[in-house]
Structures are given as C-alpha cells and as structure tokens.
Image (tube, rainbow, N blue to C red; front, side, top):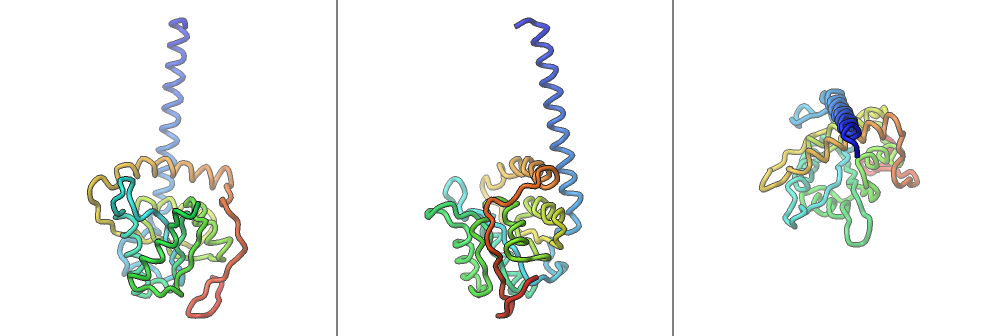
Length: 225
C-alpha cells in the first residue's frame, strides 16, 4: 500500500472515530439531561404510583458471586411497596430457556422480603430495557408507573418511557458496591444509551415478543392504569 493511501486511511479513520465519539457523547448527555428530573433517590420525594416496574438482572455476577445490583433492586422494590409508594410490582426480565429465569428469581426474593405474591406480576419477555418498557404499555396497559432499577440504568429506562409519552418516574435503588462490581457496566451502559436513541428516535424498534394484553389487579380489582 502506498504511503499516501495509508495516510488517507488513517485520516478517515480518525474522522470516523471522532464522529462516533461525538455521537456517543451527545446522545448520552441528551438521555441523562432530559430525564434527570424524573429520577429520585429519596423515597420520601417519590410520587406514588399504583404499579412499580422492577427491571430484571441476574442474581449472580459473572464470577458466580451474588449480585449486589440484583438484591439492591429487590430491596428497593420491597421497601417502596411496604411504604405504599407502589401497590403492585411487575418483575420484568429474561427467560430464554428452562435454565435461566430472572422474573421467577425476582418474585421469590420479593416474597421473601414481605411482598404478597398476589401483588406481583411476572413479565418473562423483558429481554431488553426497551422490551420491559414497551411491554409495560402495550401488554399491561400502563400509562404511568415507577421504574425501579440502578441509577446508571434509570436514565435510559426513563428516556425510552418518556419518548413513548408515558408518565414514568424512576427510583434509583441503593447498591452496596463490593469487589469489582460495576467496572464493566458503565461502558456498556454508555453505548446502550446511544443505541436507545437510535431505537426510539430513528428505528422505531418493536419489542422482541408481542403478547396478548393482560390486566393487572390492584387491591383485588382488575384495573387499567
């Protein structure tokens, strides 16, 4: 390859990398800045909603140890339920096969923490954040709800919900960070926010699985919210 061609390729590679980095930076600022006012860390200030949407994650880290993120989300969801900030919980997560079932594990932990099983609905098709948010609307008929997840994840969840014209707020679950927890998540989340902008604004991405509408029972009565 000629030296001039190599220089040209390096130049275009530099332009491409700069453009990619700028897109990632701008989309991340958009996602965070446009949703920060709907994110709560103090439960006393959190508005009350009938339904809380608990975002799924594995109870185990990649090294096999217990996930502080999973248990932090479950404790936060149980606390909001017991405080009357939400009356019913949807646990939304992945269930790709018989060996992995996030919603079932979430339900078991919430029941252990004192949440009535009748006040929990499992969504087995929450494969992505986009799936969990869109299915809350098109499957469970929700127009307003409280998202319960980790702080770094809450901005993206809220962005998707708000761009769907859903009246959603989020509660950032406190996490006891130990070991190497969280080192890989911020980078993955940074790119995921950019992808969320493309999914919602440009591509109109549909949920992975579309199910028949389901009705949620609040205080024993079927209700559309």
